[in-house]
Length: 68
Image 1 (cartoon, rainbow, N blue to C red):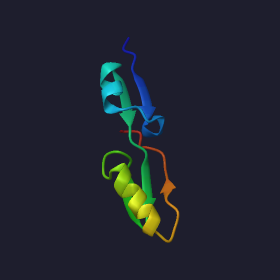
Image 2: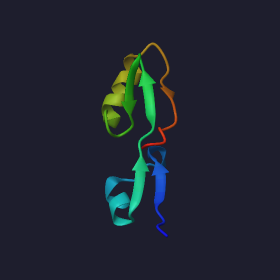
Image 3: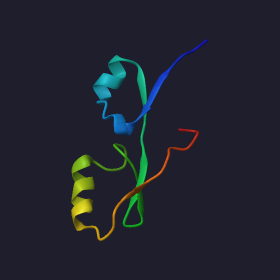
Image 4: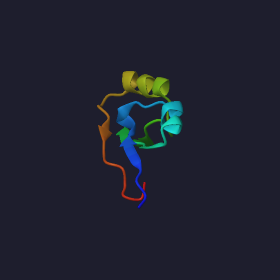
């Protein structure tokens, strides 16, 4: 039997920690100003906060797809 440790990106585990401990991190999808992103994949943290400052709406999140 195979066992894997999986978490989502809100756990804030660094890529180094994930690799060292064989943890699979699934990025949380979110939308801001009608654009879709995956946390830590499609946009950097700095870019996210820049968009947040200039956005007229709050970002929304959703769950990762089953395939991820």
